[in-house]
Length: 299
Image (cartoon, rainbow, N blue to C red; front, top):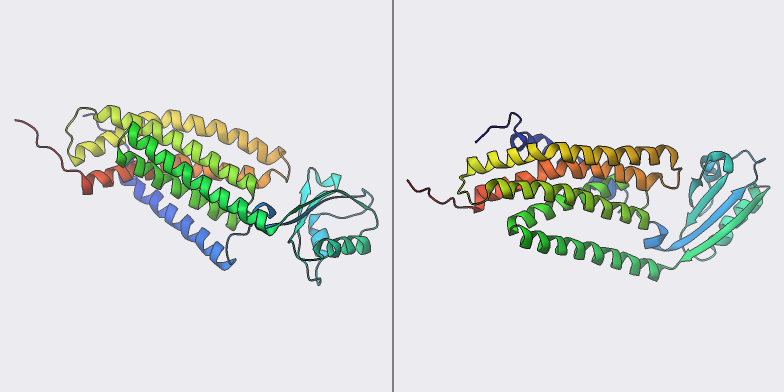
């Protein structure tokens, strides 16, 4: 069997350490902040879209400072370009919260206009959370069943563990970057799952073809996995690279409103690409090491 110069499985120990560091950093951030900060889609709350007159010298940071010393601490983000002076002002669903926010605007902003106002009740937010969790679990179960039938159970388990790795690290990035978890970020995580799974299936299909009808011992199986990753690497890299270029453009030119989703997608696809090669595939090798009993070859 032809040897591959770069040992992907052996070097996966370094990416596993990187993954552990990212997982711990994300978990630490979530614990310190008292949990993952939820957007109004999942936590419930109110959202004002406000346009300040162009003659008023203000930005999101100085607008946020106007609420210092009050009993309300709204989140504020720019919409579009800074010169447009349009903002999302989002806050909890506490009684009179909207009136308090408007009172601060009336007192400290000479000219402004409320373009729209929306409200999500706590019960609706809780229902959204429940649906999101159920949908994610259902997707992972269907993936396990699909890959288990198309390949073998070990492939399904390896794929699910790699996807959980991608999801948890992406959630960690959300907390580390101070974003609120909302429906657009849930959509970003679902997209990351799709990209990562696609890369993983390509590699698994190659591994299956390379090992078909062969009675391999553990060392030979490791060589097959390395060879399969090497053959799939060019395709995996080009697919991810072109996607990252598009996302990079979206980050730069998409405006502040799309920034959280774009950045999480960008980071998540990088994580998903390396997890297909350095997480999912090593899990297969570990499975062979601990659970597979190689058949004796006939003399």
